[in-house]
Amino acid sequence: MERSPGAESGEAPGRVTLRPAGELDISTVGTLEAALTDALARPGVREIVVDLAEVRFLDSSGVRVLVLAATAARKRDAVLRVTDPQPVVARVLRITAVGPLLGLTDPVPADGPTWRRLT
Image 1 (cartoon, rainbow, N blue to C red):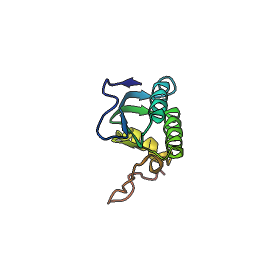
Image 2 (image 1 turned 120 degrees about the vertical axis):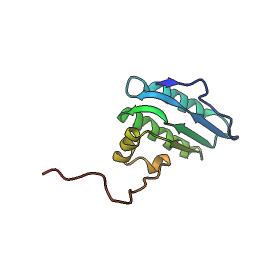
Image 3 (image 1 turned 90 degrees about the vertical axis):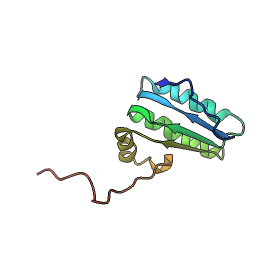
Image 4 (image 1 turned 60 degrees about the horizontal axis):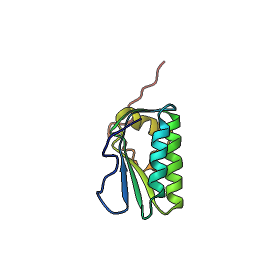
């Protein structure tokens, strides 16, 4: 996982914003896990935002780290939410049904599902 130098933002007191980039898979997710652990350990943190705009791939190990961090945040009376996932990442979060846990809403397309039955 690549991290931009501006991985934290001072947008609001008590908020930490992380902006991972690249691929979040078994070989790179340790960096995100460490950043989330550090963020959760900060005194006064009420919200952790993980901006996924630059993440082009997310596997089950990335999902696992996000879910564990969201659970740990709740135990500390804080919230972890993800924002701005690319379509492929949003799909993984939707398929694994963790989007709502991570603060994502799953809008239903007005014209119905985008899948079709193969015969």
